[in-house]
Picture (cartoon, rainbow, N blue to C red):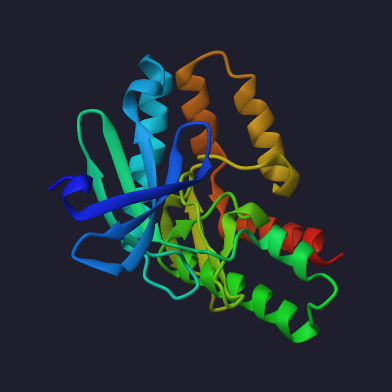
Length: 232
């Protein structure tokens, strides 16, 4: 079925470069509320750009469906038609982590801060155990519940890779770079992003990504940079 058969759209709560986000309610049970990301395919441009955006959106759906953890946002449903893609996830009404910390700065205790760090760390560790790299861990991609619990979100550039057991008993994951934010990226990722920007051809672009795969340590660096920004 389509989105409109099952859900009723309410007010808009946000928008990005390629989508808008609304509150929605399940028609058969209005106690079930979600956040729906609505992507209008006709507004994504043409050619390779449109193909890349659609690839990221479909990748986000696949990644979310592969994950099941209390510290990671949960997908409730997804729908695709000729003109639209709808992704329905849990509704996080506590806002973004950065906003939460700014609002609670005067009252945030050490215990609450350590709980935030621990929950995001558990989310990343779980993703890595499933062979998934987040690739864009930063405060705007951590959402808060109404009772102040952080949930990792935004899997649009996450990558499914190969997971092997590391020498220390943890998880080692390797995957191609799909995206990142410079301010939170490791030196290796910044170098790779710069070199990719200078590539003259699609073939050179792919060869470079294959030669310099990301690992779980790049996620951990971004996580550490996020923690420093939040609590320094």
